[in-house]
Image 1 (cartoon, rainbow, N blue to C red):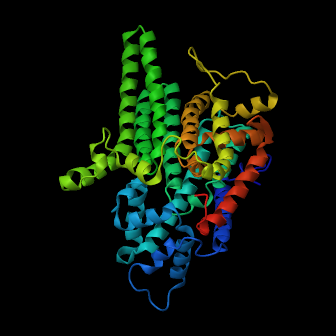
Image 2: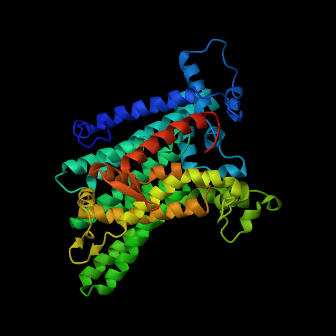
Image 3: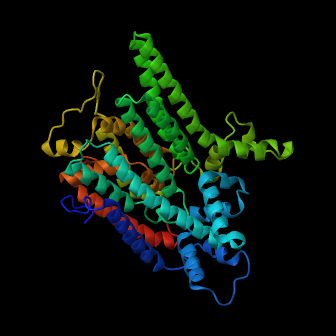
Amino acid sequence: MPFNSSSNWQHDRPGTSLTIFFVVWKLLLLLIACTSPYPGYDTSTTLLTQSGAQRPDSEHVTDIISRVLANKLTRWDAIYFANISHRGAIFEQEWAFGWGYAKIVGILSRILFAAHAGLVETAVAGILVSNFAHLLSVLVLYQISKLISPKPLSHDAQSVAFVSASLHIISPAGLFLSAPNAESSFSFLNFVGFYLYASSLQAHQDHRLGRRDVLIIVSGLVLGLATTFRSNGLLSGLLFCFDIVKSIFMVEEDVQSKTILSRLRRITILVISGVLMALGSAFPQYLAYREYCVDGRPEHRASWCTHRVPSIYAWVQSHYWNVGLFRYWTLSNAPLFALATPMLLILTASGLSFLPLSEQPSSGIKRTKISTVNESRARGWLSPVGVDVARRLAVPQILLALLALTSYHVQIATRISSGYPLWYWWLASKIVARDSIKLAGCEVRARVIVLWMVMYACLQAGLFAAFLPPA
């Protein structure tokens, strides 16, 4: 079994084992979705088959399968994504959905189906992108886990890497990682960005400064691309902010001119990387601003064009979806807070557990003393660079949980958490160490959390296909 650290799954061709587990899990969720009542309480998805050219009386089996997949998986946000990918953003509120994902899906649908690309074909292209991106993100997460482990890899380190990737497969995001949604593509790009960032820290430790600079710039570019898929990708910019502040304080401590120049060079590279990342969020905003505030008639300009920060994304989220500080805190939303609570606790507890890992200026990094043998074993899979990476990733993850609790539609915490590796590592290390976890003052076995993930994803698959919350 993937979660049995004593098995040979993680040692004998782990990539193949993860792929097989991935396919089996996807087929299970698809089976649940296909047996869910159709069309559900909302019939918006039926518009997919009613649009486009007249379909022949006799359809090929692949056409039937495509239509069934599109009908079952195009729910909630996926309806917006399918429409935007097919004909571009027309309505103001459509700019709230990942510009990058819609562009990729639109291009792929035209390549695969040419002039015959209707809404069904576009939705199928989105399903292909999401599932392929999810598989790639599983494999990338496995590689990151190995990268931040001590060399040579111990049995525990290999187990943590394999179990972490397996946990990403059964993420409580569930069918959102299979449907035409941006979550799985964001996870893939975010993980690639983190892999490049971690590689840059390793290159820095190895005094390979040229390689370090290239890797950090490319990581900023990739993380910027991730923000065009999901706006919460901006939180990853805290990695560069942390390093910039750290380098500035180190400049003040340096006395040798050569060392100062080296630090200034690093600060410059980090600033460039941060700017590249910010551009990923700013570019779609610029396109919308030009369309609504510059090219149109002055009397038809949108009201947000005159805001101090004319962001269509911020406006749409606030105006159409009532996103804002404590706006979601109503009695009617209490069940959604209850559904999101386990994931919020996991994100927070896992993030806080890595913050005490402290840095030792003279030699790099040291670990804080850990009280129990099990915890020591669980932490032992991290290399010095791995400790540094984990500590940096803790802050964006904790902030994500805080924003989800106070400002977002809280139920999305279960799906946007899929793009953050730290909690997978934390849970995997507990599973490997056979240790319990403290959540809200209660001790819980790590495998109980895995059981919750499986049950939540399966239940959510059936509800999602029936167009029922949580979404």
